[in-house]
Amino acid sequence: MKRLKVNHRTVYRYRRPVSFGEHRLMLRPRDSHDFRYVDGSLTLSPPATLRWMHDVFGNSIAIAEFEGESNELRIESTVLVDHYVSDEVLPHYPIEDYARTLPFTYQPAEQPDLASSIARHYSDPSHKVDLWAKQFLNASGPTDTQQFLFDLTRAINAQFKYEVREEEGVQTPVETLARGAGSCRDFALLMMEAVRSLGLAARFVSGYIYDPVLDGVNGEKKGSGWPHAWVQVYLPGAGWLEFDPTNGIIGGSNLIRVAVARDPSQALPVTGTYSGSPEDFVDLTVNVTVHAMNVTL
Image (cartoon, rainbow, N blue to C red; front, side, top):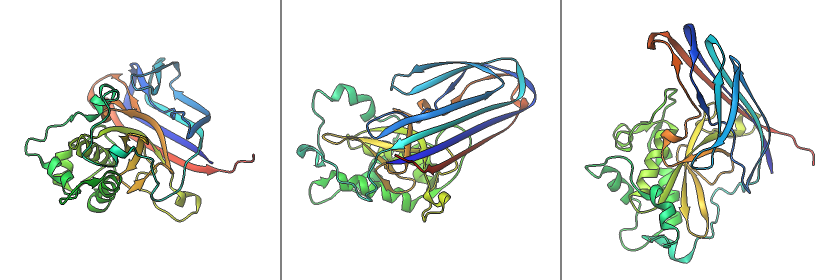
């Protein structure tokens, strides 16, 4: 078990005091059998009234209604989580026999629930994403499903240039292929659409990544210092499995899930409005730190 402390600070600055509309905050990690939320705090300035809800995917959403005007909006979340995961570089997953090789078809009982995660969401008129994904298939016979996902994850890490991008939104997968570069969100979306092109169910994950180098341990993870994004793929018998194409990581040993969604636009950490002109906005700063904590049992 690994206990991690996450601090996520977001600051918006404006040229003059403005008022703020309702904001949706996706900052609370998802509890699960492999992940336990221990404690946390959420500090907002200006002061706000909070209420909580679950969205359609079961993510925890804080709805903030701010009081008064300010030339700065500050949102700071601090959480403690316990992470129960294997540190295997290549984990072994108990996949059902019929799904061990590609192509396969999900069971009829699962298909209605997985349909929106299988459907392609981005235009690919020249089939560039399809062709790119197919290069990882075995041309002479069935393709090992797990090995295909491993190879795809590591290829994105090895072949594409990582970029930090503060502004919201993503590139289309076709744009990412053309540029050969992108953010963690862009790489996650590319992998999602690539596996969907072969009939696999995939969803977007937003959260954080723990980089041991920040605690004096050897390692270097792209995406630390910022909210991070990766992919889950559903494999029968094993369930939703995590793949981080930005870092070439298989499994979730250093990944801290906050939200899962069908599309990146549904998993933004902070969304909201302000009353004023576009010229009133000065800048946005985001800082994330993740550290391991000593635990006495």
